[in-house]
Amino acid sequence: MKQSQMFIPTMKETPADAESASHRLLLRGGYIRQNASGVYSYLPLGYKVIKKIEAIIREEMDRTGSQELLMPAMQPAELWHETGRWDVYGPELMRLKDRHDRFFALGATGEELITSLVRDYLNTYKKLPMSLYQIQTKFRDEKRPRFGLLRGREFIMKDAYTFHDSAESLDEAYWAMYHAYCRIFERCGLTFRAVLADSGAIGGKDTHEFQALAEIGEDTIAYSDTSDYAANLEMASVLDQEEGKDGETLPLEKVEGKQEVDGNQAITAYWFQTRTERAVVFLKASDEINDVKVKNLLGTDLIESIAGSDEDVMHPEEGVRVFADNGLKHVARAAYYNQAENCTYFHLDPSRDLPIESFDDLRFIKEGDPSPDGKGAIKFARGIEIGQVFKLGTKYSEAMNATYLDMDGKAKPLIMGCYGIGISRTLSAVCEQYHDDEGMVWPKALAPFTIHLITVNPKKDDQLALSEQLYNQFVQEGYDVLWDDRKERPGVKFAESELIGCPVQVIVGKRASEQIVELAARKDAERVETSTAQLSDAVKQLLTTLA
Ligand code: ATP
Ligand code: MG
Image (cartoon, rainbow, N blue to C red):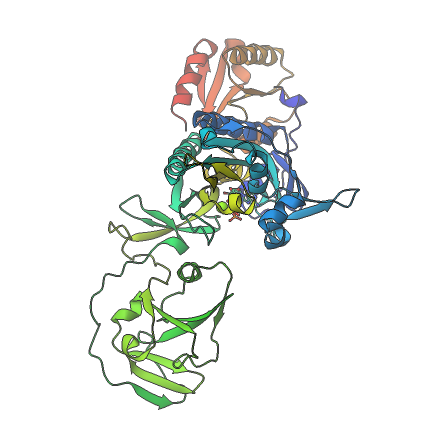
């Protein structure tokens, strides 16, 4: 493609509101343009990369036996009422009304729609399992759209759904998807981790998120420095390895007022409110309460945590459930200021002095803690969630009455799995991992063009003629080539070439008449003079050395 004819609106200045490298470089390189907060156009360069990611995804999804379909972005509200999500999803769900006053949701996800499509057809075990996927624009009215494509309000997602008649069949599909996702992200050149994630209170337990490692990431991953253990921070379990008490127990002491307390002995209490019950959780003041673990312990999604309630936690009302973190099991002498009595307790032995129902793992893991798999110590890294695989179970099929006749002649709800990849977010994640100060440094598999052919001075006939010849040759060899044939200053052309970031640069300049050009990798920009006779081999060779 001739650059003079392409729509690549590069920007010299860094856009003021671009807070991440990917956002900045995609805007500056003319890959994307913002149309509204969290709403972007993919310009020709950006869309080329998107299509390459999509091609990889299609290949790997097809390989699992999944079939592609395309469902509408506009989804009838009735379907969302069937599952109750019209009300539960909240303001993130974009809604609209047609001329007949009928409501629609702009698809934030597709469980309702796909279930409504298959429920009449998948009526017997003979038709199961079934796997379907689509690549479709999704809408979520995010509270804080940011970092460009990383958190948009309109974005491209691959979503897949599988249907089964047994937990084993679901398990098989789940792991097939898991491995397909690994291959997809490897082929995209990403450094990523598949991590255990929280499934919330809906249905099945298994879910993994795929996290691309990047400083800008919003999620924290806890991983082992020796094994392949990795989990989202809130999911990492803390080993309870200590035994017995950490000292001698003494009689409980109660002192008037708020007394000075040794930080190592201080404990805190947190209140939790669910729809049906109230609970209080004790833990060491130096540890951090993990709401997700508490939520899973109480087995509910609807929860409010209230720190520092002034109720009397030492003598809670009847019906209040009392829990403590495992760490307190081993404490012999804790200290606690009970606001309700305006007293400080010393020598408090939690298992003796508090009405604790059970000790559980209810705190966040810390860096340096032993890895939950017993191998190595925990480290933290930041990640961008690029995909998630999820065992849904029967949540949607039950709500939507999607049943099949099993071998025993009984009607049973379909067992489901769902699997998503954020395609536009993946593009951004790749940018976060593949750039330098000058611009993008694309991995081969996703680069919009593999070769950037730069004619230093197209007004010189020999440079123009040789460039044209090389351009045709590269195209014939099957490369995606961007030919900078523009009459711009060389400095501008080189700077933009760095910004756009094609893996290989071929520069046709002063020595064109001698059939000599310069070859460079965008990665290190070291230019090597090469005769045109050897160029084809040299490019091939250079490409084998690049990511
Ligand atoms: P997050 O926790 O980041 O809001 P999510 O867990 O709600 O994401 P899923 O429902 O699992 O997202 O959607 C599947 C995939 O779609 C995610 O793994 C992510 O890659 C992508 N995705 C979700 N929300 C957005 C968004 N606002 N912009 C771009 N991609 C998104
Ligand atoms: Mg997710």
